[in-house]
Image (cartoon, rainbow, N blue to C red; front, side, top):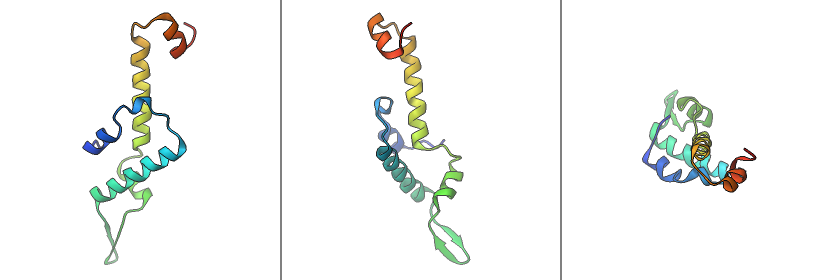
Length: 97
């Protein structure tokens, strides 16, 4: 996956976010806007055009910012599971041990 300074800023503390559908759509729009600036336009039959969403998806190999956030959340959950946390909090976070 590409990793940009903007991604690190945008996804700071994303492990704790609630990802609603509107938030997901806004993140994907932002990501595509940045990717279009990085990859630039496509010249087709002597005419320049912007890349489509499908072309951008192929270029980044289907690894978008939402999948990155979900992976970070799973990583954070694994870290919490291994931590020495009080029994009452463990029941709340993980369920009955």
